[in-house]
Length: 411
Image (cartoon, rainbow, N blue to C red):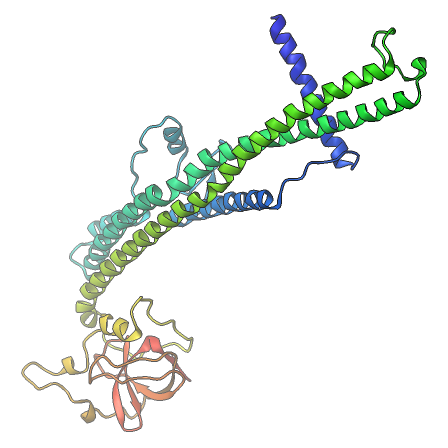
């Protein structure tokens, strides 16, 4: 118990000394040992890495599961992450898988089709869309799982492991620096007192308190200087050793960047795979719906004066347009057994033609389509039975099908 009390008193004295040194530095009353420029750059680089890693981690969680909500334990869990997930994580147990939003939507659509009539056109379409949404939900779950393991986990590992170690060593370095500067200040004061005692030999004026009255002031201060120099050498050694340890950890940030770079490439690959799967599933769904669209919705002249966005695709507009599930083409409108309708034989209706401005360049996929250039004006009209996503476009003596999404219809 006596030893513990002594240690407690010693720690309290060290803490008080550091607090005094820190306060005097803040008020400009004490000198401060400055780190070299390279060390300061390493510190700034580490701080930036930590701050941006936290932001990227939080935003990636929002991307994977949007709308973060407080969990009630001082943290923020991504949307859909319930309190039980937080508890599972703290208990080091596997979190049970939940249905994704897409799978839940598929379930509701399937139930709606069953109740409203699975043989009706609406019910059949609900079933088809539900199957597609279920596949999308499964792809989303795989993407979230892959991204969490390959990208989020390394970021969390850095913040909860490496960065905590760096922070701990930086705090030790800060304390060693305060001890070093306190020793420097103590030595400086001891030397000043020794010099004063040498020039003013009056014992009664110069003797420090609590010293034996029979000793001379000069000898006492000489011993104090020797003691302060010894403490300074020890403090300098401890500071240098801690600075080297901290420097090595800070230089390891470069390895962290290399690791995060590899994880970032894996994240991009998983995201690419996910969106490719979504595109494929939706393309299949569009083809299924487009096969019966013409029979359900007779073609009408439908358009908007608002500019439309081009089809989102990683391919060129030509490829995107070629893969767009259009309704029956002009050629397919011919009765069975009759030759395909030739565009040059199609005459514009007496009324119903309009002018349209082309929004984006479009390259014709075949001879039945009309190539377009952005900002040019063409005449468009619809034919009975045409897919509402397509119109007949004329420019001079050229004629062909054009996608509505590439046009701004003018009044």
